[in-house]
Length: 195
Length: 195
DNA sequence: CAACGATACGGAACAACGTTCCGTTTAGCT
DNA sequence: AGCTAAACGGAACGTTGTTCCGTATCGTTG
Image (cartoon, rainbow over all chains, first blue to last red; front, side):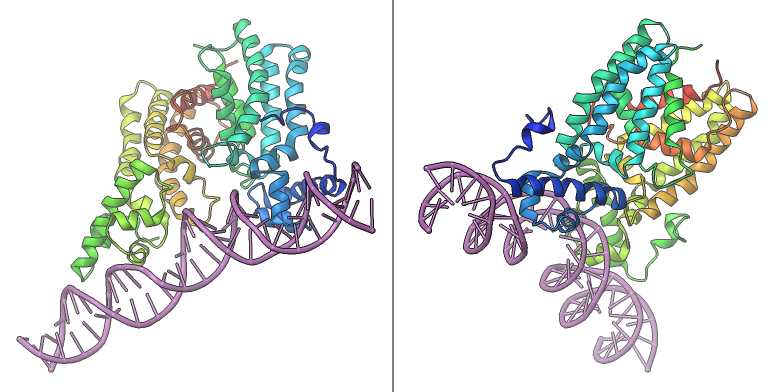
């Protein structure tokens, strides 16, 4: 819970083998995630890193911590894109739409990440919480701006929208006929106050 | 695959203990599903029915077959509601909206059913196929009618819409702050050609 | 109605998973 | 060099879904 900020701090360990192993594990995990998805067995990652299971679990007490560590940079980038888009886009609603596109692309790119984001599976509360803590405020900002401009309906909270978009992305990478990006676009369109 | 029609036929077995056990299993499964969700361990269902694992697996070779059998009636009702709504609703788009509401209610009521509908998990292809075979044609009919009336955009296939709505329902039963029904409504709104 | 063969039964056993635990090794300070 | 705290590996545990087979039982047939 206190690992929320910067990588420089928590990678610090007295022993350099520990630091090296953590790094190796991150690389191995990233590699395995792209080939087998985030559901890949923990053992695969450990063996790919040439490391024991105990080592993996000491560095990343739960599978969620590993996923968070692997994708932290990209989540950060997505979060930072929010305010930027708000300035560059013609309208707040356009900014929102573009940001959602970013978010969708991120989720769809990682095999099964979206599926794992629904925290009802035990052990993933951490992942869920991290995503929400970092991205919901950004989404709220975009939504508020669009609301203030009178562009969208007022009764959809950021958290609901994000969970909805996240859910829409589930299984998107497996099936080319299911276009999660377009569907998310439709959802954002539906936010507009018409009628 | 040939279990698709009527229950009267396939429940027929020479031995009445077999028939009785199948019935008991269905009741036990339904009961366990409402308390523990469709993810409930198979052993729970078998023991609740006072029956061995082998018995359960002989009657329902895969967990999906069990789920299908338990919910067949309700799926059927949902499917039949489609054409009816098309006649009773003022516009095709209204019919579509109401039908989606029905579909969402069905999914949200069953704990975790929506989550399990994404067939990427092995063993659930059957469930996925059953739902799709039965409901996609209905949804297609509603969509076509709305398209013919010029009410909605044309580039969202029924399958995509249904998978999207199904995904939106994932985890809805667990968290009162996540309103899948409203979100599905927004999605259907987004289908309307505006701008 | 008795015997027999097909059918169904129960649950032990297997495989795959995440996670825990602990005896062993080793890095880095004194 | 020696010592201790830290990190290591991987066997072992608990929980899944699923398979398998020796045993019990039903329904028919002589």
